[in-house]
Image (cartoon, rainbow, N blue to C red; front, top):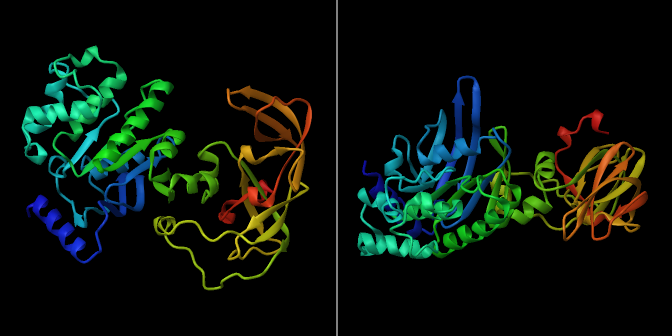
Length: 402
């Protein structure tokens, strides 16, 4: 089968029926190395033109997932599709993807222009332009218009990263894959380049799958984020949803600073309007539909002998006696304010410029607070019910957590 023709036909047919397939789809994909599952039954969909990021700790399966999309690895089970068409058995060079690796892999014996043009040895430039015009166009895009004749080793790390991106984009791929391309750069340069990468992606409208371990980077540049753990996504959602409404305890604790509480419900107040027919979907479907309607009820939770009140969704089936997990971001803990209050002692403080990150000792456990002014000694911090987010992951809470 001619893969390029079949993908084009599949996309055209879907568009004609107003059911355009995702640009990239993983359907029940598993990759095993012996008895170890590096990727475990992953299903996700990347929309055409979307900037989609896989984020997670080392060993969570994010790079293996990217390699499965690129074709450098074949799945043990499941299917990878581009625009609705399976790419099983299709080699990387025929998948119409551009890849930017962590080490850039520029050819030292070639000039910058020759590096960018390398992919054009195997494909004609898109848009009917000449090879030289395509190289000039891309070097302009990555803000290196005068670098064509330079030696790659004469460039800074950030410049090399942009050349690697230009080279990946030269043949006009349908999908751009980036595997931690900024991990070797210093923090300030990473911040500048991530804005540039997102700008380039937006200008071209190219479907992009990005791998990083940097949570801040993932939140800053993505349309949607998949938080990976043990070979599978724990949550797939827009960055604001992942940060403000983490789906599991792992997401709450991995993405940014957070205070996670676990306790037993002692009281539930508010209108009982729970919809008995409501049910959860798969992680990607639920995320695609967006956040649920705002909570209208509150629950009192006994945490370490303190009663803390949190807002719960109107569809929640929480009852008195249930175990409940919830989180409160450090910026929502306020000094001498809030309906729920906790007396704690300042253990340490880190001045971060705009804010101070304060660690409090509350009954032997740490609480994190962000403040403008330094704190010391005994303090009282509090939060209101709407500042807390209930994590629908009660099964993960053990009696040791209460």
